[in-house]
Length: 89
Image 1 (tube, rainbow, N blue to C red):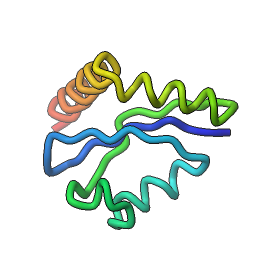
Image 2 (image 1 turned 60 degrees about the horizontal axis):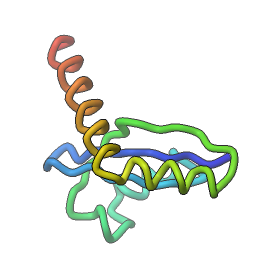
Image 3 (image 1 turned 90 degrees about the vertical axis):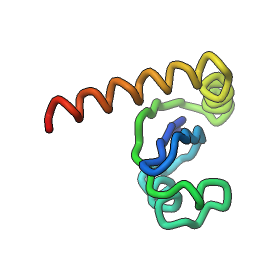
Image 4 (image 1 turned 120 degrees about the vertical axis):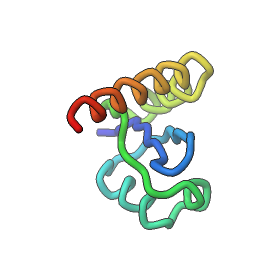
């Protein structure tokens, strides 16, 4: 099983999309600064994930979420999560 995921920086307006077979471990690695690409943007929160049965399927979905349309949808998801958090404050 593979996962396509999107994480959002809590410090800057930055969303990272990736794929992994161990979602919890991968997010932990991002937050601990082990990944060069995301290290300057720590800490992160998971804003989206989906399962894929094969790596090929996951890669196709990852490419979609990295596209302009996909990133726009992720920005909308992030905005909705922020609004929900604000309401619960």
